[in-house]
Length: 265
Image 1 (cartoon, rainbow, N blue to C red):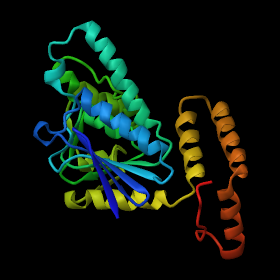
Image 2 (image 1 turned 90 degrees about the vertical axis):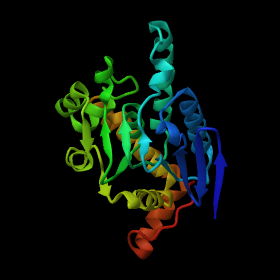
Image 3 (image 1 turned 120 degrees about the vertical axis):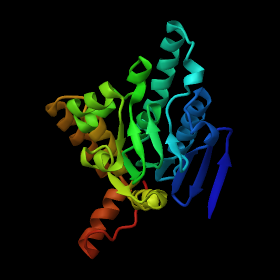
Image 4 (image 1 turned 45 degrees about the horizontal axis):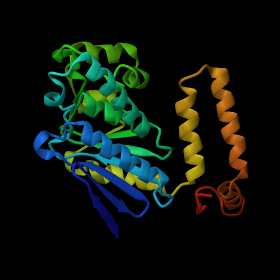
């Protein structure tokens, strides 16, 4: 049974251990204004703190996951205004990226500018065959300001990221899959179902081990190999204080792999 909470610009639905955040500004192609980001950040914090939620999906509408920032909101903004706004925007995206649970972006239509930057905060991106993604900020005389110059090259490499950022071109789904920007490409009508299957697989897993795995990988990417190996070692050893470790290993010994039922403790 699902439960839905409606805010002004997003919907939050809980279905078992999977929660879905749906951007809900269809007339504006889900443009990311300040209110959207405030509400997404609040929802992310609530779902992070909810022990009944094991994985999160972020999605939009059929026409647009999110077509970018709300340009009308910032067209006449001053340097001082945007210096403060960009700090809040980056903080909002970072809060989403640091949710210590698996996050899947389900993308149909356009994911451009801030929309792609939001999708880059997810662990996985399921993309519809008709989707277009990109960082077109350069065509407006600016650059990505919510992680596009940082998360994108970490994901697909600096040369490919520079091509996308320098040209502002739209990337179709097949190319996105080929360069690692998409993890799965499926027919548009199957995007959410595929994302839900992926999220559901993680939602029933050992929550503390998944948290540790996500933190070890993400934090390890920001440091040298020796420091990264130490991060991994500490997380690995720490999991031997959990019920799930004992459950998982006892189940393996008694029943073979993949049979354990985890409690999240």
